[in-house]
Length: 420
Image (cartoon, one colour):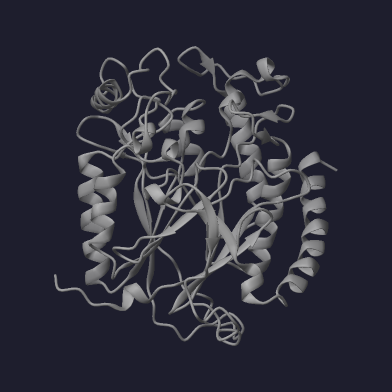
């Protein structure tokens, strides 16, 4: 029996055990499910549920849509270790957790799965340095002076673990993929529909209309007429990573942004030392969104409004400054946030990765929910961290697994008709 098959079988057994535990937890009151998220002052405070209907009012009403959510798997064929700031990381266990999540998604028959990025770790680029062994297919292609075969094999292994789920998987990408592979290769591996802009740079933003629940299955069918669109942003549109130093317009822009906003650049390009507040976002492991993508975002939301669709936004980097640590924000988060706020009747929520410990805020101006999802990578065995999200007409129900926190978000803000 292959190691991967053993992994999947083990995940099935552990998933069955987790169902028993979860069914017991569901008997708890909504108040017992309250959890903590980061407030605007960066202190941890109790986050009260945003809905007065957190009990069983939807027990007999199937959701209009259900999707799986996971982020920051960061698999690498190396022993467990730590981040550069000392947080424990479980590189191999992340694969087991991913296989378990995929099995759960398949059994729940979710409409789609969203991977919020960083499917592999940057340390794949030099596994021997981190205690791993190079055991890959012979491959001669390289990314600069880096052999990319380890990164390719690591992605293949994660995709194989995810393949237990037979439905649609929407991928975005983060900084860690770019430490290993080119965007061309990511398009091939993750099926991200990159667009070549007039500058010649590849950018991976796109939308996907999520298919409704199976109307032929009485248990799964929903009477909802809601149309739901996933809108996937590329937050490494403007960045240094995998952009040609000589010819890339976007890399030149990224260089200008970092030069103007971080005195540590270029010698300590990933250091926010000496920067205060949201200015700490100006580091090289982050990125920004360029004008063409901002225009596309505006147009896509206008079309969604015209077609009476609701939208959930997905990105690797967080958008709202109160949903994450400042060092994780998109460089021009304010421009993105301004656009999203003008479509509060359309946008239900925004989900992101990158900030491994998670975070949440409901934007006071628009009512849109901004959630940073907890990382798979930093959950110690046997904990497996991911989420299943149920979309009802009046709320989102976040069913967190492992270290992913559960909650209920009402979506009354989308009921207000705006004058446009």
